[in-house]
Image (cartoon, rainbow, N blue to C red; front, side, top):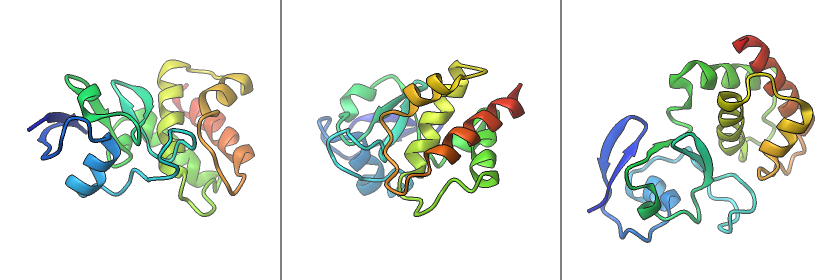
Length: 152
């Protein structure tokens, strides 16, 4: 039985090692914050952080996470950067339907952990793999800039 390090806890997962992280989280562990979007790593709704790097959990097998730390939307607010991103999301009323937002927040958090003062180009590059069908990209960019200012 694979052991994963999820949100600061060692967790045994009763699943085959080829199972995508997404399904281990949702179906095996009951963690519904990470969303299924396309199943092909194209939309970003399923984004989690693997040792701080955004990955598409719908196509990343749990075997790829061995020895690494998985952070999901359920725990992103446990640190200063995640809290700043979540607060900026609320302040800028980013979410419309909300379906893509957990993936968006995970990617934005990873960006701000690596880039303290991102340019518009930095934001666009970091967020390029996250699709928002409601089109709140302008608010997403504003929220990321605001979170960066809060963290400065």
